[in-house]
Length: 360
Image 1 (spheres, rainbow, N blue to C red):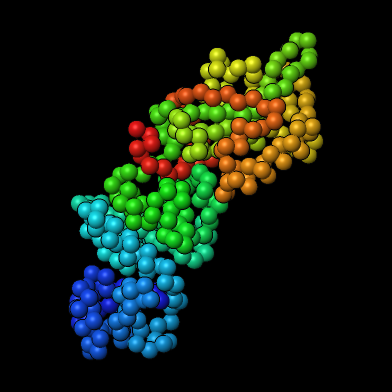
Image 2: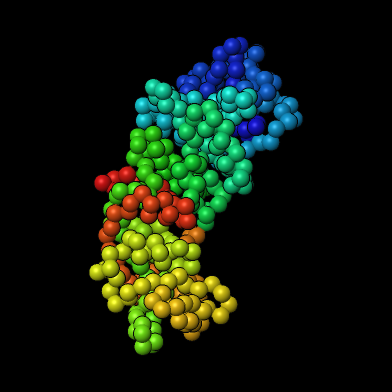
């Protein structure tokens, strides 16, 4: 791919990186015969952006057939390159390689420390998740761990995702800021290379479970049970509900998972739980005796509540609204997830990236 403002060029057999050159050396390249673009080896000229970023441009328009990028991308590459080096890694910009089967890849920044290879990609244009996974597979085949920063899929990346372990990705806004971590791009790269980022939740670690349910009563004489119809379950680091992974109450198997995780003594008045019904009549079965009940009278309130919640959040309801569910019940308990409980949660909902020190 041709960059609108590429950072690499070739002079003879030597590779030049614009942001690595002293200003005088960069300016001396003007009119230098033999200066070539790294992407296509046509003639290159040194230039500076309106913000002062040094880069190389094609000497003639149309000499390279691949699509250009916006200025946002090379600025991001320069930030990532400097951050990687500040973190103590050897780093190259616009580095390429091939898988054992011969498939080519090119990273925005490629980092090496010992035997560890880490790549960073700033995805500035639209991409499907299937294409993202395919590109990640090339890195994986080459034993390179790649971390993606994306300016698209903002809503999706605000939520936990099952694929975050295999394809790490974070939303990046137009100010080179990562809202999910409240860090800028350079800080995020340094945190990633320094082992300061972690996927949440983790197996064997304490989590705070907040179970939000509509309490109902069964009037059958042989049951007389109080049940909770699940609206949502929040899984967060203890004391940090704003970082919650939110499990919708309609998730199949959620009630069984809650029963396995929640000690009976901590369930309050609700002895059993069931998922929020998704059928048009909002019918559900009492988890105690199987009696048919209906949540239709609560559905409009729930829909209104969700709309208010989503106005305060990006991609998922603001967790502050999770505690305002009218006539609902909230059960909060700290618990350690075992391997099976953790696996179910990751498969059904996924994980999100947080700072490691929030788990310590």
